[in-house]
Amino acid sequence: MTIATGSNPTPSTSGSTRRGMLRSVLAFFNENRLLTAGVLLLLALFLFGYIGAQRISPKMADMGAAPLNLRPSAEHPLGTDGLGRDMFAVMVIGIPNTFKIGFLAGAVGVFIGAFIGLFAGYYKGYADAIFSSFADVMLVIPALAILITVSAYVRVVTVEIMAMIVGLLSWPLPARLIRAQTLSLRERLFVEVARLSGQNDLEIIVLQILPNLTAYLAASFVGAVSSGILAAVGLEVLGLGPQNIPTIGRTLYYAFNYSALFKGMWWWWGPPIVTLAVIFTGLFLMSISLDKYANPRLRGSTRS
Picture 1 (cartoon, helix red, strand yellow):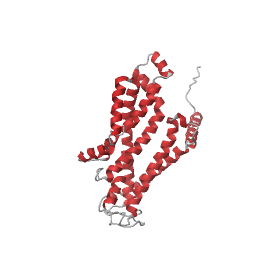
Picture 2 (cartoon, one colour):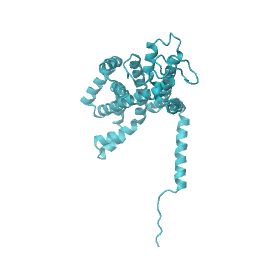
Picture 3 (spheres, one colour):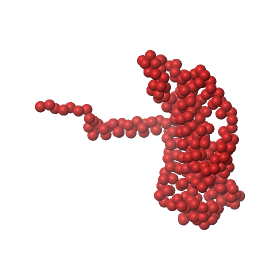
C-alpha cells in the first residue's frame, strides 16, 4: 500500500500565509506613514465618488436638472450652480473623471519615458545623444503652450483624448530619470554576470535592470499623475477641456465664467478647490515617501 504525501498546503498553512502577508502590508504602511496618509486622502475621494454615485442620479449633473443658484440644503447638499446642476452630482461625476485623466496621462507619460530612458541609457552612443537631445528640447518648450495649441485644433475632446494629449507631452522628465539610473545599473556586476551567462540585451533590460527601477517608476508615476491633473485642470479652466463631461477643471471654468466668486456663490467654486487641494496633498505625501526609496541618500535620514 502506497501512502501519497503531497506538498499541497493545508488550510491552516494557507491561513498563516495570508496572515503573514497582511502583517507585512500593515507593517509597510505603518513604517511609511506619509505614504499611508496620501493613500487615505485619495481613497477618501474615491469613496466619496463611489458612495455618492449610489445616492444621486447622474442626470442631476446635467444642465437644467435642478433650480438655479440654490444654497446648500438637505435636498441639495452642495447647492446648485447657475446652470441648474446639482453640485453634489457634479462632484460625484467630476472627481473620477479628473482622476481618470491624471492616471491615464501618468501611465502614458511614464511608459513612453521608461521605454526611451531604458533604450538610451542601456545602448548609449548615438541613441542616447538623439533621445537626450530630443528630451531636452521638449523640456525647454512650454508644455502648456503646446497643450493649448493642440487642444484648440481638436474638435471633440473627451476624457481619454485629454489624457492622451497631456500624457504625450509628459514623458521627458521620467525619461531623464530612468536614463540616468539605467546608465548606472548597466555597469553593475550583476548585469555583467547576466551578460556572461548568455542573456541577450532584451533579457538583461527586462529581467535585470527593470526590476531595480521599480521605486523610480513609482515615484515618476505619482509625479506624472500630479502634473497631468494640473495640466488638465489648467486647460479646462481656459475652456479647452471636455465640453459636456463634468470635471473639476470644467466646474471651475463655469464658476469663473459666471462670476460665482463675485456673486458670493462659494458652494460653486469651493468644493472643486478643496478637492484639488486634497488631491495634490495626497499625491505630494506619496511622492515624498516614495522618494525615500528612489533616492538612497534619503534612506535613514527621514521617517515616513
